[in-house]
Length: 441
RNA sequence: GGGGCCAUAGGGUAGCCUGGUAUCCUACAGGACUGGGGGUCCUGUGACCGGCGUUCAAAUCGCCGUGGCCCCA
Image (cartoon, rainbow, N blue to C red):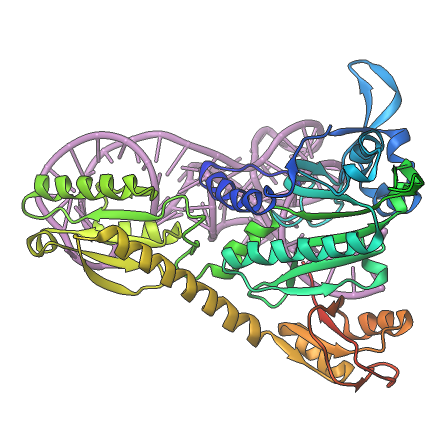
């Protein structure tokens, strides 16, 4: 079916490992929950700005069996309107705040054109959405920073460089005060939005009447945030690290971390016995190890495991056994002979170095794809191959004109960076504001 | 929103113009020899996106549907 995806076992194994990192990063101060897929029309239609943003993409359930429903049910395109009515019931006083929850669920959006696996789906299968509630606008704002920090850590662990920017007002989440987004630059120079954090202010609090009693007894509206990551993170992971030989997976998320290829020459039983012993040793050190006893030739096995992105391959042959060593080959082609004695430590060290090498390589590509420009013409050229950093006065008019004339999208203002004054590429007004521009997936 | 191109074994393809026996590579299954970077030989398995129409006969021609790719707004 158009826009629907099937996770095969190998892909699912990667996904499990990737999402384990997300859970690990959120669990210390967030609680995992699960809310219903179906949202009654009356709840869904309460928040006007939100509806406007999603109404063309919502799937509706209109009958139960053969009887039409009195109240239509929306398949969640995102879960604010499913969750926030509950927040109204849960939150009574300042002591209930801050509240931080998340869920990892499927969401549905009726994309009318050009769906792409992992990137633009009608059923997003693995949407991690966090929702937080705070006593003040400022507290919510700092939660947005926390979210971006967690996501930054997440992408570092995937060895993926990224851009953080504040989306322009016309591209923020429907109902949000502002949206901060994380984009990864894909090998073709287009960007992929792989994480967003929204400051919702009190927009939804007003609509869903979410209030709390302050320490001196007044009722006050809460401030909220929400932030999300989907399986797009896996699209980025695959695209950025992959090369002509296939996938290259970071150690932490690789379904198979070590592949052992026995070289069956001479005393085959001996080679197999030693290989099995090594496999057992590494497994007990909690490594995910596969011993490849298929009857392909060794060369074919090497290519096979490289294509699957396995970080480290061990070759065990009669010559190695004689010397008490194994041949270790990393996914980035670094090849060494290491003693069997202390193999676990040696592999851990190589895994760390490989992770650093993956990150460095990705970072070099990333940096080469971002360029500062001064004019619309230069921005147009640069966005054909990567991301342009363009001086902008910050006005909405100039913003729209930039997008029209550069023929690319504005990602927004870079965060955590300051710039000297420069002339807006449209109106020439001096300002310290910059915006990233790129062609987007 | 508008337009163009395309759909053939699990994947990649030839055949389509000019209607008649569906090509090759790979993968997969069995066997033999092999084995430190994609092995060889033998024997098999497996496909014309769906519907309707034209015709003695449709992968091939026409219409509709579905799906994919690309361009423009």
